[in-house]
Image 1: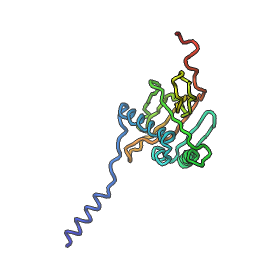
Image 2 (image 1 turned 30 degrees about the vertical axis):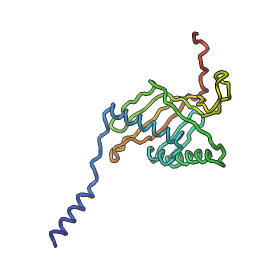
Image 3 (image 1 turned 60 degrees about the vertical axis):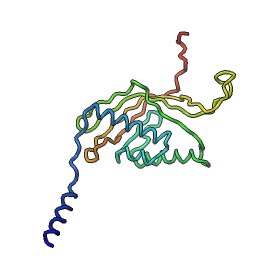
Image 4 (image 1 turned 180 degrees about the vertical axis):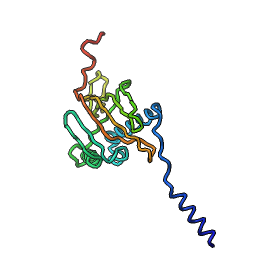
Length: 193
């Protein structure tokens, strides 16, 4: 009986030992993880409209700074609440029912730089798009019209991702979004035919 009790106590002590903190990945692997989490973040905030998924990607003290709005959020909870509010507005009966938008990363614009053993800095450009109803005939007489994604602007972003060694993952600690502007004219006026 005493032996069984001693074994049970030993087993509970062993299982209560916290896992070893994971070392920050090498830059190539860190870049892959950050790209995947960046995509997950923007999908959840825009097209997926899933505030809970956004929350899982941020540090508690997350901040977002925007060139047009200033300090958008000074903690995770306020940012997640604003995403939830925007998503609720898209629902039937909301202020903007049926609204859909997306963010696309500009290919070749992203760089990821190590920040020691603390985390990484991600920089890049992205574009913003809204789903709009295209009138019939827009692309020619046979065009029946329908929904189309329209680029409505773009910006540069700087993301600071903190390595959470006890979780073995990155979390976004700060987002800086700058140089917002209208969508570029397409085709460009200097385009050759």
